[in-house]
Amino acid sequence: MPRAVRVRTDYKGVSYVEKSDERIFYITYRRPESRKLYEEKVGRKSEGWAVARAAAERARRMNGQAQ
Image 1 (tube, one colour):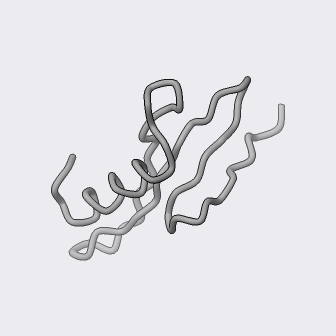
Image 2: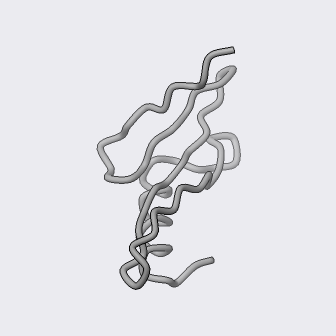
């Protein structure tokens, strides 16, 4: 079975996967203190997530305000 293709957005570090009429949003970021690359699933469109909300969550996590 082929891997799902991630679609890049206009927001840096935000992508999504379309599966059966559903978008699943992912964020990638680095924290300044460790430079480790983090890649996390943040939510689905049916849960109220959108590209702009995922970008805002990415900014919060990069600054260490959210876990």
